[in-house]
Image (cartoon, rainbow, N blue to C red; front, side):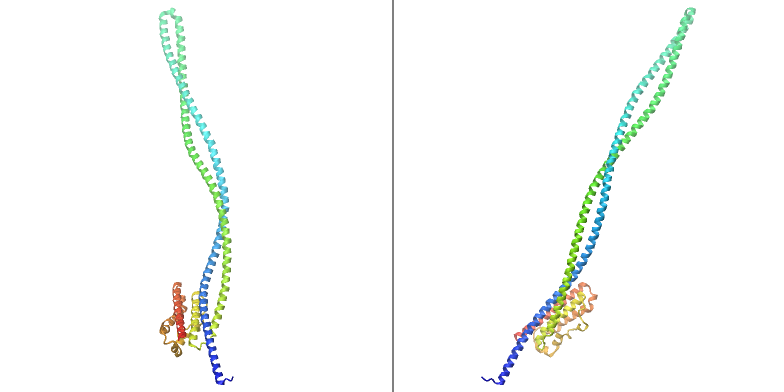
Length: 424
């Protein structure tokens, strides 16, 4: 069967048209998926950078904590050493306090014995004074008898003188009796004198004994205070020894725990460092994937206006991502020529062009996108880049949230335009 060349050309045109349609559909899918992927990679990257800052802060905190725990462990070791010395001193104090109590008990027994002896001396002195007073009384009786005898012998001598020779012998006897009475009186006087001396000495002894009793009583009272003090010292020393033992045990446990803590913190720090290393590898992979996606989108032809809208979505995802990376995380992500306003980017040029207005200018939402939402994205992004360093962290985060929200509105508007184009 013969087919004319014109029909062949028509079939070829149909095939080319079908292929072009298929290619456009494929490019559309690629652009959409690449844009979604870029958006996800951007958010993941931003979250990862925030995570990196947190993990770096955690690593720094762990390093400081490890240093603090190591210092605490060293201090605990020193305290344990000091507790050893304290324990030895407490044991020594306990032994010395025990010796003090024993010595006091010996001293107290001696004081009690001396007190009893003094009391016995006091009792003996009472008996002695009683006997001495009795002797003095007897001497006074003897002295009285001597006086009476002397008086009687004087009367007898007078009577003997009156009797003359007959009373001469009796006079001799009277003289002898008077002489004896005189000697008795003299002896009684000497006895009284001796008794007075004895009484005087006994009184002095009594004063000394009384003073000794008072001193012993004071010593006994003081001894009671000393005994109470020594017992308190013994109790304190015993408690100190017990507490020093508890301190020694506690410091030993503390040292062991701090050593274990230090080991675990070092292990955690090692795991954190490994996590940071893994994150950096993941971030590098993420960055490479993001660059590949950007290159893929850049290779998509944008002759069709709605294909251009799909690619424009990726442009804004990439641009907002770079702004946030530079402002929030300190990356040098943007080149000077990328700091464009809303009229210089691909989408802005398209919206201002006759092609753009012809393609979507009649659709609802065009004026809001062209005059409000799209300019807001660029205004917020440029403000963050140029003024971000002078802002507080809270102000930067607030503007960043507004930028992301405005960017999402741009993407939603472009999605709406692309969707409407497929229905027409």
